[in-house]
Amino acid sequence: MANLMMRLPISLRSFSVSASSSNGSPPVIGGPSGGVGPMIVELPLDKIRRPLMRTRSNDQNKVKELMDSIRQIGLQVPVDVIEVDGTYYGFSGCHRYEAHQKLGLPTIRCKIRKGTKETLRHHLR
Image (tube, rainbow, N blue to C red; front, side, top):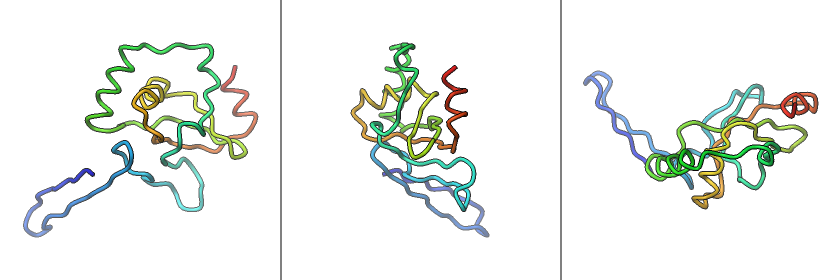
């Protein structure tokens, strides 16, 4: 669990913020009400399809650096995921995704945007 304490002028007093999850990031950070626009949530790695992983390879030095960083401070930037008809597709954050896999973390923080099949076809070009 992470704790943050900020000292403010006496008129504002002090407060603390606390959050935890399996990899140091909060399970739900936010999202507009009504489900419109992107939302940031924790998703299980095995629920994210990575259609470009077959054609691309990751820089293993970068993966190792990210693993070290994630161990120390958690994931700082969520991966972008498109949700189409209840299925999640990841097209960015390949190094972050692999680092989570190698660390054995079950979930990853994602910025989810709703998409259509046409959106998905566009990303596969």
